[in-house]
Image 1 (cartoon, helix red, strand yellow):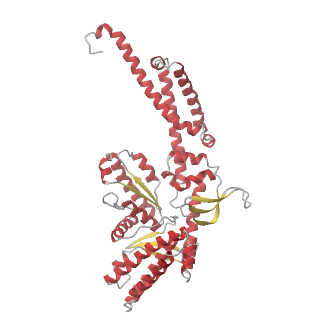
Image 2 (tube, rainbow, N blue to C red):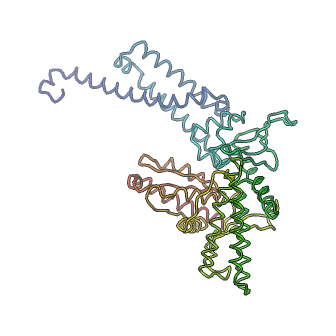
Image 3 (cartoon, rainbow, N blue to C red):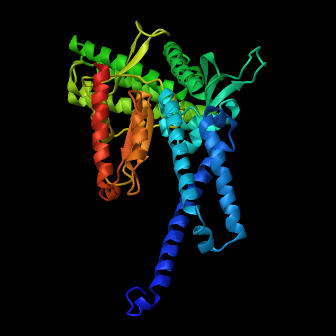
Length: 479
């Protein structure tokens, strides 16, 4: 209309409406922004008394905003004329003030969540909504129970005894449970679920690792007996595989030492024992077995078949010493009896890499069939892990890149986090996951061929610098 040749005749009216409509547009956009923030924060401050007690200043500020916002919305309902409402005296200032206050509350809330994540770094892998729900239910461990699986790999449910059942004053966790097969593992000592939730979750993590250390020592001792059926039935699936790997490493090292001393058929004889052991396991799995035992057996047989194949490759390659590369490039598990609280500590070696076994409970969720390509990927990724660097499995979609990394984390008993990047991914969302990563957590960023081209430049730069920074920080802490 302002471009019309008749604009001069209606200038005052046109300018008045232009200003009014611009103000209406600005106020409505601000109201929508305030509404989005209010909806998110209302579910926090109006539903959780614990959050209000821990953030009293922000809670009082939100109550003020809530009253003002309710008054504005009531007036809009009574007089639904947009121009009248949005151009009312002080309306823009009122909405702008609400937006500023909500922004202040949000920043304070983010800082509060950050302090909780600093105590228990695995909270970095939990969304803000879930974390607020956990914090709001910190006095009710039974309600926090459903979020446990978001903080641990195979540990899905706590075995909890209520107050007074065993002369205990508070809720106590006695063990952990994997829900799909019902596998359980008892803690060395009960964890008291009282006080700040992030503190007892840290204790829960320590109890899990201490329990796995003790159970591994017990499993190694039981493996030496003749009753392998009882050993398989009683021991957790993860520890069956680890115990078998430790025994296989010891046997192969002894056989290669015997070859160096002139007994050239030592490795072939060991392979015959391995085949006989596999035959015994396959005979066992053909019988009537509970689901839990069958699942454990399938995973154990999968890994023992790989051990047999490695022996066959070493025989064909003519391995005759523990220093031969065909042996050094294998994933070797060693149990040092002179260290640890429960009679030994497990370490993992490959080539010149030496990593600690993570003792993260992995549950009973199966293992991948190991191929020569898998072995090469594991060799590369484990070396990258040892050097505090990143690895890059490259290949078409659906070829098993992600699953290979997850299976490696099972071998090392470490917590694995998979981040699927897309064109909508922002650096801030990945930043939280990287902040939560440390020496006992794998953070695997999955970039498919299609998604890598659509990532914004800022995200690609952030991934590169974050990986470099983590590598430098890990190296410095090690030194």
